[in-house]
Image (cartoon, rainbow, N blue to C red; front, side):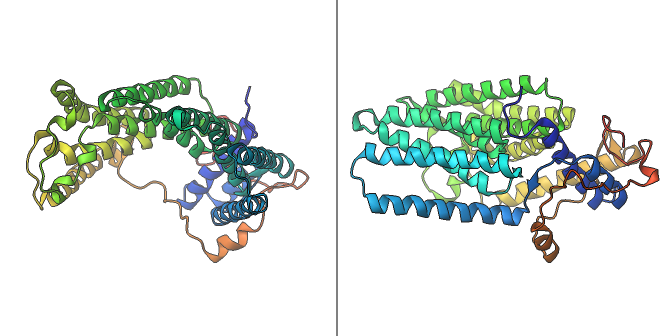
Length: 398
């Protein structure tokens, strides 16, 4: 049972439409095939252009902030509880209005409901923090607020489908060890447990996911958690680049026990290799990118781990080595049959999406993308029948 405001069919149709537009820009499908896909995947919602979406977010935050500020300017409360109650009321009103806009207008990523929903989380946490305001229990208040923010952020992800809400929720969970009286070593251990458990649960839940849009969101979340896991393991990451600007030597073993330090050094090489291997095996672009980036960070912090001296030409040598490695990899892939090896190629099959704002985008952004139910869909061309669409999906008769 889904608790989201949008059905899985709507999310899947929106995902197919985004993919179809990418295929069309790349020349993989014709204009008639794109129209046929749009006709058969009507999500029955209204979305907004990216430019207006950002504009609506800013405008909504300014208007709502002005209303709240004007209220407190008139009331002028001097007590925490008196301030917390109006904040909680505004939070409930903002969230209720966000849900109403989605249900009544069938909005999808319009910006107004996004700003109200996120604002509701921030106002709720601020109100609860004022209720719990006590200098003797300030640390416990920070811990409770972080947990509350994580819960509300995950609720927004499940209810509205905002991917960034889930990422903010994980960020709030990762801040929990830093709100406790723990040493640096135990803070990192707790952080590794949180990230490892979250990554494991995400991987296990992804096995039962069949929709393509869920797989895409899950892959991004897993890649971000994997990157966070690596950043926690790398003990020299906070010191990266300090040797170029600080004459003082780095702290021996980064302040950790030697055994843990050298285990961390070995893991900085092992984790990127696992990320690259897993990304190539399951063909997850996000994991491949994270694995490559973490490998570069490992090479950048290698001298810090070994206590070696940095030189001004180190970045140039690293850049030249990366360029040489990329050229060798491209030549190796191009040497395979069909310029690919095991389905992996260096050729750009899909044209990158253009997120720029032009006159055509500004004109079409004002027209809602919702298609009325009574409107007759465009007729698909005859070559599109019988599955000759150039890539429509196995479950749909393209």
